[in-house]
Image (cartoon, rainbow, N blue to C red; front, side, top):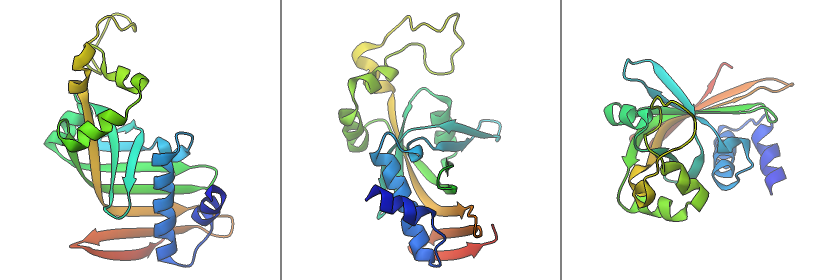
Length: 198
């Protein structure tokens, strides 16, 4: 099954619908398989000064039918403040073996409490929860790399789910027999699919 998905995702397809489905399969693979290269895309936000900020994140969930994906973050991190101010965000992934790039853009919503955050926290392994059990918060200047303070049970309060509802998905395949680039845009519930010059 995985081998079939890999062939389908990397082949030069003549169908825009095939390309969209192959792109969705790669994102689903990333959310399900910790060993997949699609597990660690880059999340792009607008910084406080308006400059782009990119960080590697872990893709935790992908829902093609509802067109959203989820990553986790420390609620004290700069990206949460950036998204609270300006929720426009992007996601970028590159698969060197398949020679496929995906770019998604849309609007992010932040979930620190409620069913989305509660379900995600409940599903985390203890070692993943431990990443939120630290003081001070991410990006703070410290004298040494050792963690000297812990928040204990309050670590749940530092946890946040970022849900990106994407409205564009762009695919690029660099193939020996020719490159292919396609863009999928959803507006008002309608999908517009276009070929682009690579």
